[in-house]
Image 1 (cartoon, rainbow, N blue to C red):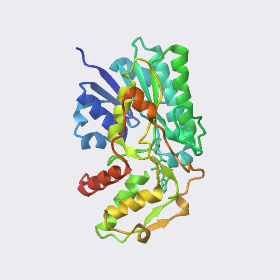
Image 2: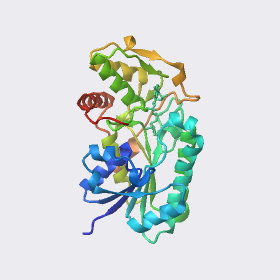
Image 3: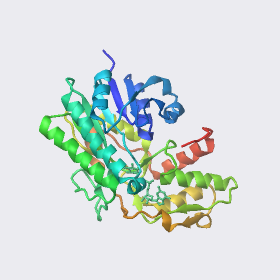
Image 4: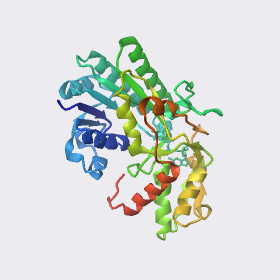
Length: 326
Ligand code: GDR
């Protein structure tokens, strides 16, 4: 049997690196693209020991020709679109770059798939942020989008574009609506890494304070390495569809902080400062998920709950010797 060919757009990010590792393990040939092209930081791929197995292509999401050129060269069977600005907080400071990378970039990729001679299967990384506040219910695939940030607005547009191309042109295109998913590959602009890294430093003797924004928010936090399996499974079904991916369990950020500090034998209230400068202009208060469809159709379930996630992040933080530049 010939090897399947996968193109991962955004391969140098957390999910891209874990997905590349998963697909290599399944015998795929893997190409990856990055915003920063051939000079991309491949730290995450190197950390996973796969940097020399992934062929890096330069692709500019807002340049349709560069996308067509890469698709033509790579001839992929599957494209996983994980590219674009991924920080909700940063999207308030960089709304235009966020919109262009996510919304325009997704349409450009869909066009390249539509115009290709190959029957390419397309995965799009959606986001639970599209739901906004889930208003007392746990979101599933039928829950309306009420985005509350430039990032979520762009992800909603991209998700609707995927659905439109699926319906209009019969493309095999799926959106995974992933709730928060964490790993040691997260940079510390995301809150879980920021908390765990600070707690470990404090436990090792640092007298710093951990500055946080809104700790009353509630989220469903899962383990990124197992979430990428759901992406792969979506593209192996008979029919394309969208899926909510989450653990199905929600806790507050305050609880997350409390569990983390307890795990390193410290009292979080002695070390955390609430900093109004870190509040977002608008914020999703509660993210609650119903991932039943993924379990039923894909046979996918999260096996790591948030306590496992925290324990694994602490272990990795304590073993970290990556000369971290992220
Ligand atoms: P999020 O992740 O915005 O949910 O997006 P992030 O970890 O940045 O924030 C989670 C929640 O914590 C609150 N918060 C803080 N966040 C950061 N970064 N730093 C702080 O100091 C801080 N204090 C409180 C935030 O306000 C927020 O409510 C992630 C990304 O991976 C997206 O790409 C993805 O789509 C969604 O998860 C699902």
